[in-house]
Image (cartoon, rainbow, N blue to C red):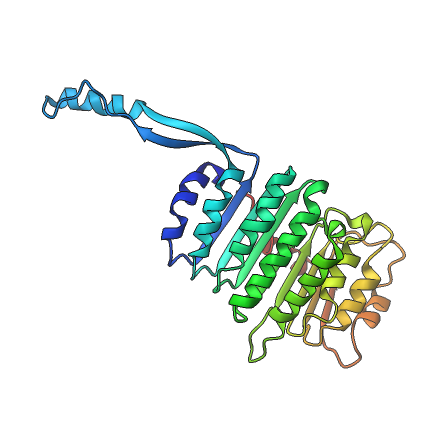
Length: 303
């Protein structure tokens, strides 16, 4: 369980300046963690003594380590400061769980912008497992993360996977900020920019999740080559029309994976025709085995 090591990671992450890969890492902001405070020195041990006495004193000292209990949320500032120093981090696999507003606020305002300050980041697999009340704040955090990556990354980010997001809880401002950030991340030229984007299992499929995501995507992803959507639409197919419109605005797409239970009335060929311009040679796959394998590789691994 990676959460057991969070205190040590928070204390030392900033020293790993040459770290290139991290994860799977899971931060449950409500977790209670034991943090060592001081090591007591036994008054029964002299500067000299027999080996047996020294060994006994060592055991006594070890038994007197003081611990205090903290929440994982209280470690977010230290973790954020550590990520600010990870100048070579290229691959991050991260799950964050938030069940209360203070945790969501700290994650969105402090922690996620720090993640975006990793200039070498090329692949980010991020799952945000949160309550409805936290959903809108965390989408704002995604916007700040993407904005920072656009500012400092210079087109390094190639793959972005976002799971379990409450897209419909986002403010219009946050969605517009993500749109602008994706545009900056994608339209770099010279072979740079975002190539692969995955949206997996949004929490609010029946409440317009895919429509909201498409607001971010439409016209913003000129360099995008692969798009993967897993279970993003409502039972009646709500959002799939908006997705076709958004896909049509991605001129360099080579592959689109649509994965999940589709409505009985869904017309595969009609969707392809609506999504692709006549000159496009992009592959569109519906529930292909290879698509599900790609989805698995883009999922944040809960540790």
